[in-house]
Image (cartoon, rainbow, N blue to C red):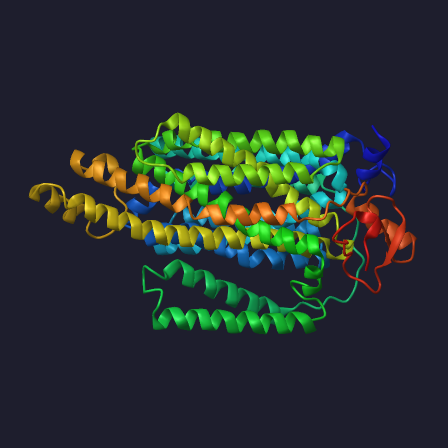
Length: 566
């Protein structure tokens, strides 16, 4: 093992003295419970992805309900992520991630008993609350035990687990739905979750945190949650439940703006702010947050609407839908694993991320050309390109932020990037769902106008209430109309991602190219205690910053870590 590798994997584990390097095997043992917990959260989310059109249809839901079933989880995840991240800087991280896993899986199990879309949405919110903790804490704990330079090597494992859960989940969900019914999809993760909680207890060993008086920013939690929730609810409902330019619309926007302005004021004054605004003085954090917004749209939007495309525009079953979306997840798995290892070997990350953003832009443009009769070979290629681009960007945005912030803000900085990625995904899915509902309704009206009177009457009876149809049960003439409407609608909706992909490309190109640190989070904490509160440059190890007077290491816009200033 190289010297850098030995330094990067220092932790505290049974039989290992503080400061003694962990072997590769010991690091893998420490990550095993974390990886299984991540797999559970991904599996519980993706196992229902391909059956959602059937679930919403069976529960008599319309396109708005379908969008809400998805965005409810994303909304709860988004709102809770910065709270979990701040708690990670204050409390026991191991206990927090076990608690998040319990909340997530309990919400998933309860969703299996839903009798209508309203109760399903409530339990999906519970899933999201746990999911926010899993998304933030897994990245934070990984930074505790592995250095930024070595993290790409192990990030490939997270990418592999993500891809396995994302690919296997829809396939398993499709098989279970076709064989036993969709409700069993929500119970699959329960036994795996129990194993994950036990494994976390046995294998994850983190040093005790320094005990201190904790000040929880309750007012900040309330204001941020209220402002973000109002904004996302407005985006979801506007254009469906009420017009964009209407009194309810203006009232919700006004309320969201007031709540968020008040949150900013509170965060400036709070002793322990949920989102320390000083973080945004760091150029890397600011640019990564902007890029994360658009990456969230690409990641969440494609997974949601490709499932609808496959089933409603191509007539695929849930199982077939899962198989047809493998190219995107395959692209994500291959790129995240390969380029993660490449970053660990070379220390070069910026060129890889810029190339990934180019692929995201190209994939968005190509998916924008989808129609109901587009060759599935081309659809697979388009998905692979987009998935490969997302795999080169998503985890590395967190990596570069963790590489530049002070160790005391590691948790909140990580959760901030994750928060804005979830926010972008939630807003993106809501907007795309609203646009898709409008487009599909218009295309169906235009299509049925050309049919015979008998078929027009049948269309009014089966499609008139806006409920998502089961395409296989429709008459042939109506089936063509619906497939064409969803094929064209989904393709046009993907074009909304193109401007965001351009923003991603620009912001990633502007990121300061700071060398990756060779110390883990635990190493950095121990170093601070040994040097009386001084942090060192990630590249040189030279003491540069007195962390008692500066909470964030600010990189220069032109140079590397040797020019970091406080």
